[in-house]
Length: 340
Image 1 (tube, one colour):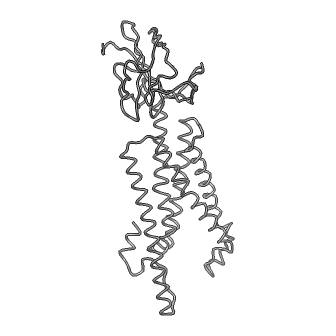
Image 2: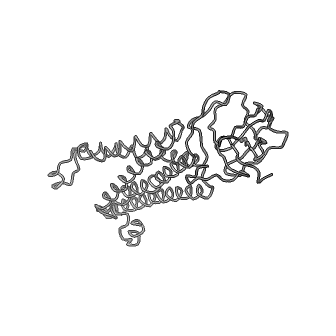
């Protein structure tokens, strides 16, 4: 009877799903199946005695499918069916299509799934509205891609240039640092616009972290624009003595402190975002690996700088002379490594 199945309706919760599928066949008979799924795997049907589905009815007329049934609040199938006795609220996922349950279209097709805009109380009687899943999914992927580029790519490179590349790059370190940071701010702003335009604000942990990241990033951007004002910069004094201003210490304190605060906040934001995207394990592993590479490289470079500084201090004591703080002095190949 596989070929006779006309349409199906599925509702569930994202992640580990409790799914009910209703079929209305060409001859008008109605079937309801109780299913479950984990992650991205095809939903499996519970055993016939699990699910406590009864009072099945339905019809198909004028392009509309109606399926009615009764499902026990508690089926006793722990790990397969949700216990609804406490009237919990879940996001609902609706899909339709002919035949067996397949991966639903995610390219703007008319039969693309719909996800409820907010959580729905299972025990309440109300109309439920939703947004096409492909729009939500594309918005999430675009947001995630922009934030990953900004905060796993550009921002660490900008900070690295400011911390370790001054001697190697000369005055160009500042141009590189500023350009990368401005790009980070732009990508962050665009990603926020994209996600708020395609998803409803529910104030989960990731969204709260995202707002905090955006706020701190905005403050950092303003600080950067006002650095001369905050520092008390004087052009003539800079030309004569190289001084950036009497209050330069205040700008450095604020700028660096916010940078250190952003470090754990953005890491938490990226990790919670990766969890929400439910990415394939290979992609998740690759991102974790890259973050590890960045961490090891930064820590290793810091240790290298400390070692060179210690050696320079020892040489200064022995010779009674000053020393060059260039961490790549006398090592031309290191200049190329650090530039890359």
